[in-house]
Image 1 (cartoon, rainbow, N blue to C red):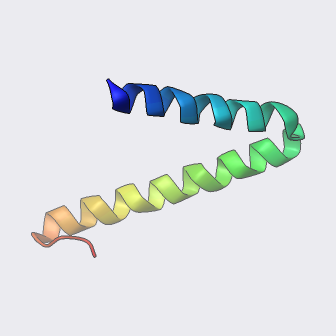
Image 2: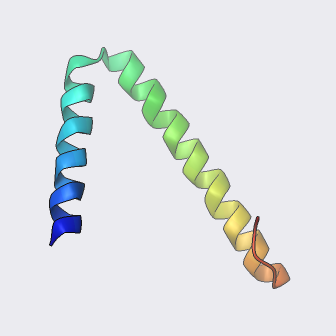
Length: 55
């Protein structure tokens, strides 16, 4: 339950920050996060295929 409260609090802080930031800045930061998550997913998939952990 405490984890859920903390997650909702962080979500509220992040959404509040985005609401006050200019739209182009928010889109750029969102794109950076998407690329970062894509690279992470590819590294994880590649590491699992080789049978080693991606470090």
